[in-house]
Amino acid sequence: MNDTAAALAVLGAGSWGTALAIQFARAGHPTRLWGRDAAQQATMAHERRNARYLPDATFPEHLSVARNLDEALSGAGEILIAVPSHALRKLLKEIAPRLDKQVRLAWATKGFERETGLLPHQVAREILGDRRAFAVLSGPTFAREVGSGLPTAMTIASADEAFATELAKSLSDGSFRAYTSNDIVGVEVGGAIKNVLAVGTGLADGLGFGANTRVALITRGLVEMTRLGVALGAKRETFMGLAGLGDLVLTCTDDQSRNRRFGLLLAAGKSAEDALAEIGQVVEGYLAARAVHLVAARQNVDMPICEGIYRLLYEGLPAREVVKALMSRPIKAEFSE
Image 1 (cartoon, one colour):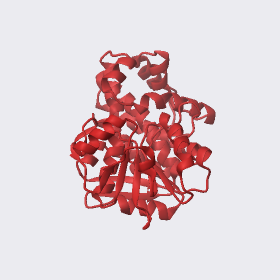
Image 2 (spheres, one colour):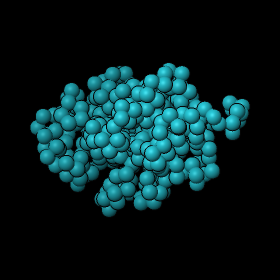
Image 3 (tube, one colour):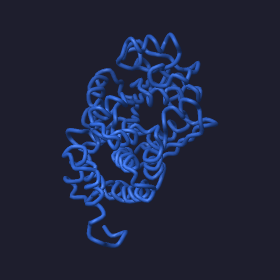
């Protein structure tokens, strides 16, 4: 982090933004947390915790709650955005006139933009240009465990090696380790597609398809993730790391994942709308399924698992028909393209 930076501004006070703000502050860095809900902001400032999303994680000394966006951004040398993918463009447009030229920007947003199929860094470049240092944070992390200080590792990717390294050092302490990468595309693709696959594994588990099906979905899902990532310019090895395989396994196998829980609720007979309402937070996999369908078609990349999940969510194809279609595909070599 810049030596001259008074604070890091974290924009987005949901569970993930709050957890990251806590971790930066826990590691000793002045951090400001901002969210759109003014009443929630006031409550967090008074209670020194986010009772709505992370009730058991108290705020460290170095974490303050900003009353408004201008206060959050004032004097900040680095900004971390932690909002859902569908809200990223609006927030970037909102902060663009307020940013000094030297301010560096990172995000923990996961997913393709729903309408355009753009990755977060592409949205950021459209709005802010390409002369600013950008970074993305991703990897196998649940907000509750980060907020509790449990041992965690993640990846920070940036074309600016110094920025990635400084962020990693700023975030790391005795219980948190950040690794660096220069593959923004790979890290972002991994973060987007794993949510779609987690919906599928939750659904399969809820229907009682068993462990064999779950591991097949994860393993072949990793192939699809890699296939699309490479087509978009990512490095193949990225998908064998924390932001690829690591995040995929975590999200597909643990019920802390909203995407997996969404799939389980669908398997229990809930409609998509009722399942989303019951979870009460954004389920990125539901939104991402449509965007991945769009991008895969645009790139002419074969993604049968993701396509099956898309058809189930948006075209009403029964889950057992999705599995049947996958199992009846032509026989071919496992590692053929």
